[in-house]
Image 1 (tube, rainbow, N blue to C red):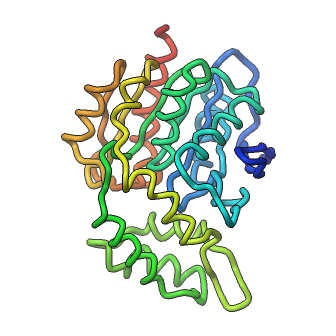
Image 2 (image 1 turned 90 degrees about the vertical axis):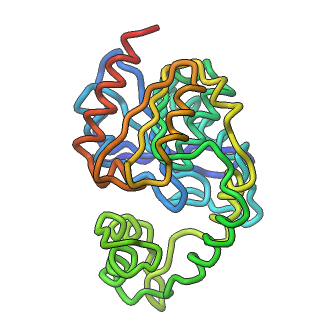
Length: 284
């Protein structure tokens, strides 16, 4: 069962929100799942179904510029817009007080929403997202990487092969990453191309390339879990400092996982998140 809801985001843009399991009846809080940059709500389908089995109503949001949500040519794609969109989803779908689970960019959106609108948020899971600014070098490297994509791809098999095995930014084969990118491609007249604007993605990324976000971590008063893959983008020292800064922070890492922790090691991910939710929802 898959259901789609339309949400009106900042500036009147249309956002697509999705349920991948029949919503249970009961008193457990709802969960809003926020994907990372270049991702889409469908990447959360497995987690959403698992949450449904545990009695949660799980909703995944296609954030602006991604998936089936609007991709406004003039933007904005700044941090305020993403946070306002998430707040709109929580309010319009009646999810508050909600558990926010975010990956990468979605994790930043989650902790910023918890800091700015604490009345809307019950707990936060932050998956593999840095609080420190990435800097100009990261901007240049990402621009070169996006420009290196051999578009259009002739088939989804070529997408999986290039991103999972032949992408020059990888140290070794990553089949899960190949599947991740196959999910975000759209078939055009000349072949398969990303369903998002790479220019817009670079604009969205400026929110943490240029700025650090430690100050808002301090304002997250609800229980918060920082999860990282041992081979991911968030280093151990920075993750532990994030936990120290968070008033009610908790840390977990997943061996043999990279940036896509929830997709690469789903069993370990669910065990960690399930334990956190049990403790967080038992406390007030």
